[in-house]
Image 1: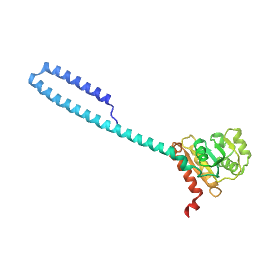
Image 2: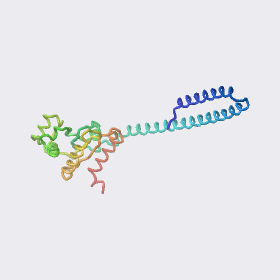
Image 3: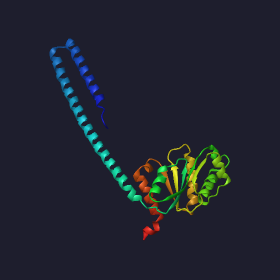
Image 4: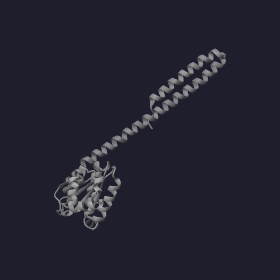
Length: 245
């Protein structure tokens, strides 16, 4: 822990003032010999305090230097990853079509990194959650119709209900061939229970129909290593049979 030296300086000044007052008062109440002994004792304590202060300062300076070196190493690592990331993802997902469905919070960087890897984002859908979401239809029913919109292009009455009530935002072409679906989940929201319910339904509905990948919309996906790992994991999953040979 880095020490606040201003606090220690103030503390030392306070000690010196107290010692001075003690000497002044003592000189009027006791003899000179006793006062000299007290003065020597006080000098010993002052010296010890000064040594402790210098030791703390030396340790803190060392910690600050180590922290600076670690930060420099992290910056060098991030710069290195930033330089090589285009080569790591380039062409990895060329010719692959993906649809993105986001539960309440979308992540633009997901679409960007997929496009950098050569993938085509055919549609981007954001499903919002509120009390109105289940007022006329169950959450699972609305989730199913959203998935059918993505997979089959079916714009049903529940989808129209969601559009009218601003519960869904849909951009792109629906119903075309897909190689996978990217599910972006919100990390912090007031509707976490509904998000988990929708996520479980999506898993059970899609597991035998199409490859899909879950991305948490958190700080990790906003880092270059997180984005590179996403592309590589999708690539390996889509080519798992080929990679086994």
